Structures are given as C-alpha cells and as structure tokens.
Length: 429
Ligand code: AR6
Image (cartoon, rainbow, N blue to C red; front, side, top):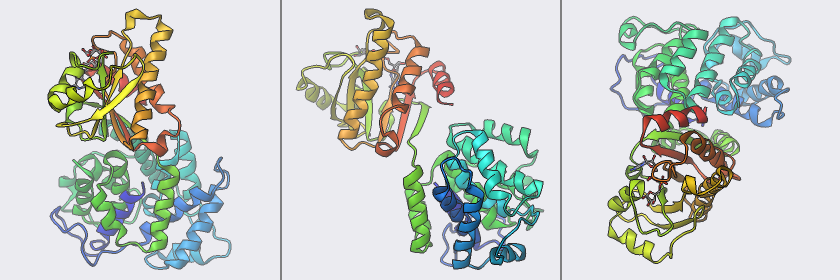
C-alpha cells in the first residue's frame, strides 16, 4: 500500500520538466527524487492513522498532518498551496489542481465501502481543493484504487469511471504527440487512468504514464496508486523506491502498511499444481493415498515421494487436515484436507464439515508459517457439494478466520470451471 503512488512520483520526478515520449527509459535513474506528491500522499496516510475511527475529524487531522510534513519538506509546491501551508488558519482556495488526486490514494486503501471512500476523499480534499473538479479528480482516483483492490476487472473500473466521472475515449497512442503539461485534475486524471487501463503489469502502467509526457510525477503517482491496487508492486521495485526515501517517510509507509494490511482474497481460473505459493490445499479422501480429480493432479505433479510421506500419516478424518512437503510442486507444502461427501450427511452437518476443512487447513498453514495459500473447490467434484453453498462456505470460512490479515498475505481460490469462477467472483464482491 502507498508504494504505487511513491514509485510513480519518484520515477516521474526526472521527467516532469523534461518530458520523454517513450516507454523505453531507466525506471529508477540516479537523479530521481521523491517530490511533494509523495510527501502529501504520506500526510494523508498519517492523518487517516491518527483520526478517529468514525472519521469525523479526518479533515482537521489532514490539515495538521499536511502542515507538519509540508514544513519539514517545503519544496515543490504551487504558490497557493505554499500560502496555505504557511497560514495560521488555512482555508480552501477553490483549486481544481491535480494535487488533490495525486495525494489521495490512502483513502482508496482504507475505505470499506464506496460510500466511505467518497466521504473520506471529500474530507481530505475539500480542505484545499474545494472546486468541483478538484473534488471529482480526487474521488475518481480513490474510487479506482478501491475498485482495483476489491477485485474488479479493468472493464468494470473503466465503466464506473466513465459513468460517474470522465469520458475516457482516447488511447495513449492517440494523445502522446500532442499531450502537454497540464496541472488540472480534468487534464491529468483521465490520462493517468488510461495509462492503467492499457497496462499489462505494475511496471508497464508506470511506463505508460511517463510515456505521454505532461506532469509526469503526478501522472505516475495516480497511475501507480491504481496499478498497485490491481497488480501489487514487485518487492524489488518497493525496495528501490525505499532507497530514495528518508527514514521518517519510510516509517509512515511501514506504519500504514502494518495498520491496514489486508489479506488479498482472490479467485483464479488456474491449475492449482502450477501455483508457486507457500501451500496448496488438496481435496483428498480419508485414506490420503491419492484418488481422482485435484488429488490425482497434485500427486502426479509432486511425484512418488508425496505418496510415500502420505503413507506415514495414517489417513485423516473428514473435516480435518494434515500437511506434507510439496516435493516437485512449485508450492512448498501440500495441506491435505478431507471434504464431506455431500449425500452422506444432513445439509447442516455437511456445511459444518466443509467449513472445518478450510479452518483446519488454515490452522496448519499458520503453524508452518505459510503466508500464501491456494484452495481448490473442496468437495465440488466427486463429493458433489452444491456449488453455490460450497462457495459461500469457503469464502465465509476464510474471511472469518481469526486474525486472517495478520497471518496471511494472500488466499487464492484456484478453480477449474467458469461456473465456479463466476460464483466466487460474485461472493467475493
Ligand atoms: N486445479 C484446480 N482445481 C482442480 C484441479 C486442478 N488441477 N483438478 C480438479 N479440480 P475433486 P472432491 C477441481 O473431485 O469433490 C478425489 O478422488 C474440480 O474441477 O478433485 O473434494 C479424492 O481422492 C472440482 O471443482 O474433489 C477424493 O476421493 C474441485 O477441484 C475425492 O476426489 C474438487 O473436485 C474428493 O472429492
């Protein structure tokens, strides 16, 4: 969290007044720097951390944090904002500048619902940028971050932005030659979002944003914020960004990530045996000696040593789990769980047993320090659990697992059919 905006700002800093119209450049040049975009992004993050749970003092906390941090790092601001920072009782100045959008991303990470994101966005924006375009630019950015982090597709995010904020009816190639420095929200946010929509990865999104020229660090910060929420930021890029930040700013990033860390819960249409996670879960039977479906695929990919270790485990009861190494699999461990055969039980009993497959598997994952886990659709094949109920139980069991965010980085539901994929997608919304 927050890294997307920081990376975009740092990478773009070199090109703000020295535009390049290409994607082919060194990402972190030696003369890159963090700028006011990073400083104010971190001020908003700090304000969110110190404000009350109900957010009623978020605006005043933001004023305080911006003034405090802005005075420690007093360069790069426009004239009006500089006056605002220096004022004893600072008042909004009807700005539509893109500063409202470049600093807002923390809101998209923290708000629990779209309405909350919009309320928070208004609180941290209207203290300076109370022009309708200033409010709109910040809200569109925060909402895009929120939608990206809650599993929406690029098409869904684009649709929401087009329906509610901006008509984005151009491609980057179409504007690249003519686009120039523009410090307004309305001349920056749509372009920054398009840089994300056309991207294939986090890094590609940042390169897109820089490649059109204009206010490069601000474009980078906005694009980067949404791209991080959608793709995540590779560890290497995070540590490069960290190397440009002084200790106090790094401290704010760490504190924010610590306080608001959320386990990513996703669905993916993928063969579970291909996933390089800490642990994959196997939908096994009580013998633990292999079978059909996903059990077969896992044993086949892991090799005969997996079966040899399974033989030492003395089977496993329905609703329980046992763990082995992953052998030839990219995953470090396999957690074997035994789902209920649906017809053998009363529906409530079957539901309870299936729920317990997920929690007992997570208990083992936690015990073995596994932070990234992939689950198949347990009991949804040979054991004939009705899809809709199984998906609801799976998502509910994972979401309600005690201290999930503290123990796990990501949980993937790896499914094999479009039907299941869509059911998970709906359940996860
Ligand atoms: N990756 C992800 N999902 C898969 C894969 C794969 N490689 N292969 C199958 N699936 P099932 P169950 C999906 O029958 O209902 C075995 O014989 C599959 O499409 O594997 O819990 C065991 O030994 C389905 O949606 O597990 C047990 O006897 C889901 O995985 C019995 O089957 C689960 O289907 C367990 O039955």
